[in-house]
Length: 91
Image (cartoon, rainbow, N blue to C red; front, side, top):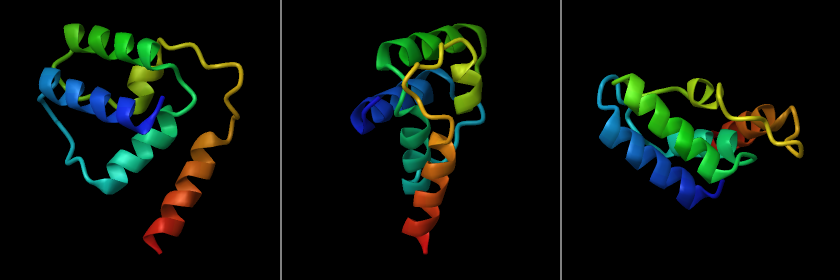
């Protein structure tokens, strides 16, 4: 997913799942974009819509990705690398 696709997804979820909605700041956006980067937008959007039909609260990335197959090309350490980059940007 691209950063703009991640933004669109978060806006969709904020509209559909208002309970326990997070404060969307720069760190939140960077973390979500990094975590969702290897996944196709259509699959994650479909999972978000399915979640919104069943639950009123804002999901975590892990909750959304429960039903999305992991892409074959995704490295196992993508999240660790994203966290490291986020820490570098903060410091």
